[in-house]
Image 1 (cartoon, rainbow, N blue to C red):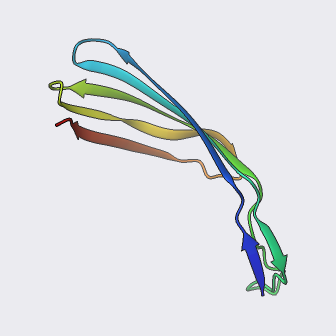
Image 2: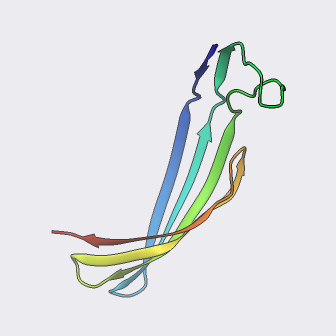
Length: 106
């Protein structure tokens, strides 16, 4: 039996946009996240093949970007879409996805 104390998470994000035309805007979001190692106290136990169980997670960090293109139909209605992916990291998985949103200002 034991107890795992989660590590703290720190996130830093920066974003910018560049207007090409009245309707088209280029956007870029950059994010950096760090997660401190978890701490375990107690007896870890034994895994499925009788090896010592691994408990907790080490320090990790992640740098990701999300470039996008935004289209304004009117001042109140727009669409934004683009990829979001990891550039580098430590003890994290690489990822790639496509995100999009329709927004309405009332």
